[in-house]
Image (cartoon, rainbow, N blue to C red; front, top):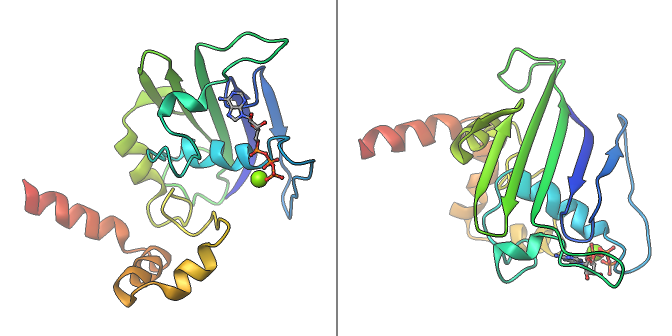
Length: 180
Ligand code: ATP
Ligand code: MG
């Protein structure tokens, strides 16, 4: 499984439709300060279901929507679509390519899609559980996070190993059934 394409519209500094095509192997994003490198990472976290505005470097969810510039008007919604190669079927869906999308409007309306079908945030979380790619997983290592992992309490560090060993899904199902 690998990330093939990121499509952004109205997300932070990406006012107009922007498509980033990514190949297998290592990809580096380079550019001057403030050019939007970190915004690309924010976009990935956001589609995977990030709900913490702080983690998205904003103060409210609306901050992810392009707020306008001297030459462009603000947008009414932000949308990000990730396309993942799934030929190895790491995602439990019978498709060789999977699209995940999130849309957020200024009025607070929020939508998620898996392969263009509207779904719940929970479906996105479940899809990525134990794949290493969820928003809580270790596929995105932010600045200072290595120190944070090394300094965390054993119980917190254990979560990373649980994700890597593929048991998060079962723990989550157990919790759900205990609640019911
Ligand atoms: P650095 O090298 O300093 O880390 P960077 O390339 O990571 O920079 P980002 O933090 O991704 O830069 O981008 C910051 C830019 O995004 C700022 O210019 C900011 O004004 C712009 N930006 C963030 N949110 C929005 C928004 N909602 N609407 C318009 N522009 C936005
Ligand atoms: Mg940055």
